[in-house]
Length: 557
Ligand code: GLC
Ligand code: CA
Image (cartoon, rainbow, N blue to C red; front, side, top):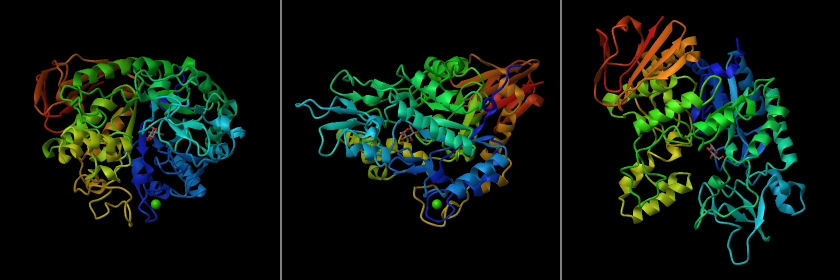
């Protein structure tokens, strides 16, 4: 039998450390907070955690603007705390994936600070520089991901440095061999400490076209001009060699927001030795019919297009990753929590739709990533004012929408359903003043709700939390881990697929709408075969009744 890599059976829990659990009362989640909650994490049944960056950072972009790649940020704890976390997770048989922001550093990183001191500094080549022609304000017309030009001028110099995200996050120059070696050492440092894998943050921009060609038209995203470059393969091959990617089974999951199924296949082809899995944002095609074209698309809340969604899912099931299937996820720290968009937050539908969504996605072939809070059906936080959102694009959207005549309330409604900050609210551990997160003042907004918190859901056998536990148990069986996948043709509002492994067969049926449905699935299926379901469904004489947002999993042995 083919040797299976550990991560083919991974069920990942994503922890956003700032918002998970605060242990020392400063209002910011930390390492000891995560350690306090290890029993909880283990009780979910997950076998892997991915933690967003906790290394020393200037915290302009919550950890993604790194100052030191091998030092734990004191905001989160000490070196010893970090080691203890790794050890405690190991003791429980839980693997750990660290976030590796490799595309850029903070402008406070010693490499960049040294580079700024002189044009002859050896660190100059760690970054990317250009001059502007006399009559132009910037070297070219690229814009940065977080607003403004992708170039910033160095004080008292004629040179500009490149930053595809934020002006305080200069892009690294991966064409420079010493930088590549230094980065491989960083990974080896963490591998020796016991880290099992890395999420390669924004790796699709590693290969910058150093001719810096103009964006066609007046201006446009520098990210788009530099994504998926030809040299990425060489850079990653070299890195993988240096870290013994294969021998040590270091799991590499690359963040490739714009990768479609074909690109995902290319990146994850084991022969190409780049990454093992891809996290893409292409999973969630929107229906743009109702969009206001006079206002930027960025923060307009648009509904999911279920038809395209199924098509995309089908494609990724086929091409999204040979061994173990694609990454499966609904939410993360960069996008709003999905139930608002793909489920239904109305009281009567909230529980069923949260359970349906988990069933629909995670029992497919692939590796689930569950974003902390998702397992209790947490909702987004809501901002009253765009000025409080740490995302420059939001302010711009607000102004343009305002000019186009949108009312404040409507603008905030859209922002609160699209801005990435809204998913970063603190974890609802209990229904108390600070929801069990801290004794201090939480760094972030949060919701306090009865029912939608860990403590209340622990007590309820039918809670979203306990549903997730059962679902994860099911997911761990051979049928759902390695069985073949086939999507069934259904009408738009339904989603159905089969999993087969030898004589075993599973049928998963989900209802994407607020109307009940009855489907003839044939008499070979009967109620005793129901392995998991949410509320209000039924099966009689081969007729499956799905409640609004109903989900039923049938297994035949
Ligand atoms: C990734 C991270 C995001 C961060 C960005 C820049 O997309 O997920 O949070 O802001 O990279 O590092
Ligand atoms: Ca803290």
